[in-house]
Image (cartoon, helix red, strand yellow):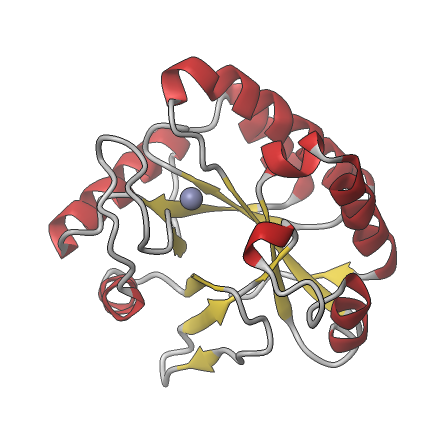
Length: 214
Ligand SMILES: [Zn+2]
């Protein structure tokens, strides 16, 4: 079985200005995924909540919606963002990832430190099933607790800025995904802006199966 997992996130700094662009690019990626029946976790921030047409595409493709956590100061701020997203989509959210990897602050609500042990703890406490982390070494293996909660500390970032491109090539991912589940992380706006990344994604979607984790 060949498995890769897709994870999509939005990292738009000025959501009010760019949300139209963000949704347009996410729409193109979702149409691409749906065309080859590839499934993904789509992570939304509190300020880039999905539109009605995006929700239809997510439903049609069998994708899962996750919380891309911005204000990670406390359990309360986490629970607040989770319920905001759940109210918007009308169902429970079981997956969480963190906006930013601890270096820079992006936007008004963003709390920059990257503290994955907190997010895992809070997610477990609130009945979630999955954490997808931001580390950049895709050879780090996931962990699972006694309740079945899964934590993937790292991902294969398609964008080269967050990947050791000599070690972790597209070929490496294809070979590893023959035997292991690996999270493939993309940002639609970056992938569509760079033709070679779009080609990489199309190649991966042609040669790998995807599956959901929880
Ligand atoms: Zn982000």
